[in-house]
Image (cartoon, rainbow, N blue to C red; front, side):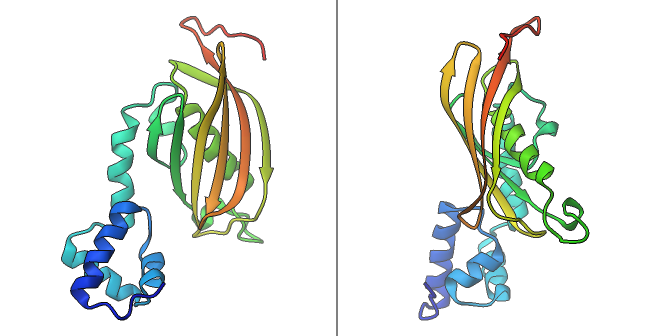
Length: 194
């Protein structure tokens, strides 16, 4: 819904509210939403002292990394932007050309899977967790430059097994989904057989 009819002051107020509600919109998405140029959005952000997308993502992610117990934060693929242990989590991955197949420029499946798998493990409230089972489905191709938003939900806990469903989106369109059964490890690294 273009907002060309807004004054600069009104547009900046709406822009501020929009970014507070969804801090992960990039300048291109905001420009499209407001019906203005990308440069106008950048100038508005600078005036309002709103950092660029990458900085907003990092600031939110840093708050969530402290909560992670089951995986080293350096092993998480993407930026962890929301986490509630044993309930849900969200990560964002900005794809690049070095993540693609050279011939097609399609993001490799192992990259998409790694984001989903590391997010699923990060949602588990345990000292360590391993993937026991993964049922995956690639629904649409992803191309370099597209932003992957993975959303994990712990759907069931049965003993040391935790069932996590992850859906990955590009611009609100599902491109991948996975159902994981994760096993929490005890102090000695022993676990039940899947």
